[in-house]
Amino acid sequence: MRKKITVVGAGNVGSTLVQRIAEGGYADVVMVDIIDGLPQGKSLDIQESAPILGFDARVTGTLSYDDTAGSDVVVVTSGVARKPGMSRDDLVNINAKIIQSVTGEIVRRSPNCVLIMVANPLDAMTHLALHLSKFPRERVFGMAGVLDTARFRTFLALELKVSVEDVQAYVLGGHGDTMVPLVRYTTVAGIPIAELLPPEKIASIVQRTRDGGAEIVNLLKTGSAYYAPSAAAAQMVKAVVFDQHRILPCSVYLHGEYGIKGLVVGVPAKLGAGGIEEIIQIKLTPEEQKALQKSAGAVRELADILKL
Image (cartoon, rainbow, N blue to C red; front, side):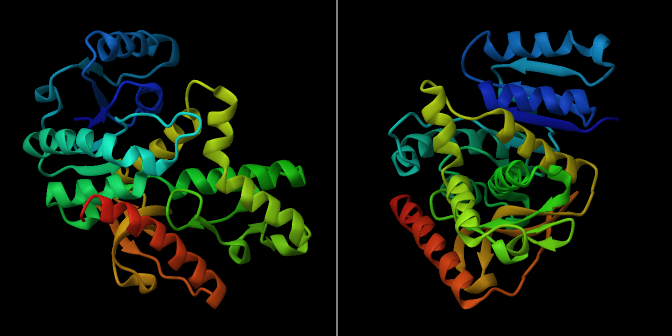
């Protein structure tokens, strides 16, 4: 029997994620939303591509959380999208109400699921979902670092005119302006990036990575990124569904790792069937540690708004 995945939210991120999961044959997928016709129509459209693309996964669109019961993995993409001029901080109170409702519905019907958060502000919404669900931290984490790292790798590959597959990197910290790309651990085919690019060029790419989401929002004017975010979420879903033990940067609640306690912050983690199997602790320089603490401080401000 195929596993069951629920995607909450039939917007651009959610529906594109459903498409990626179905086409990859990971599992049967349920897409739930509150707008009548939206999840049903998009799901049917995706399902009708199955004979062409050759997948047998069942795709169901629904307004009822009853159809999500018994899900192995639930990905929450619902929430108000960031608009031009809107900071992630502006989103916190609006999306907190949505996440509160969604988490309750999911926990009642899929008490054993792995819960992956995509809603923004990501770190705060992940912390809120963990608090409300009462799940262990291993089963509630957020998608941020995979996306931020993908952007960093993309910009480096474009600058160096090399395959993205040869660029390895990690971006840690909160999902926002204070994220921490680890330049010292960034390599191209094993060669440290500092040997291939001058410091000022690396710094500009780091800044573009931090501004990656805002750059797309400003270009689109009426929306935000969804192709790369859905691909990042799909990679995390795949790691769980297929028990891959992938080491990926995830937003996870820390119990003192990296000197941070009681906050959801992006760090490298091993992902498998049960969710977070292990938090990977790497040695940071004093400067890197300071940057990570600064990022954690920005996350703390949002957590304080939510009284977490």
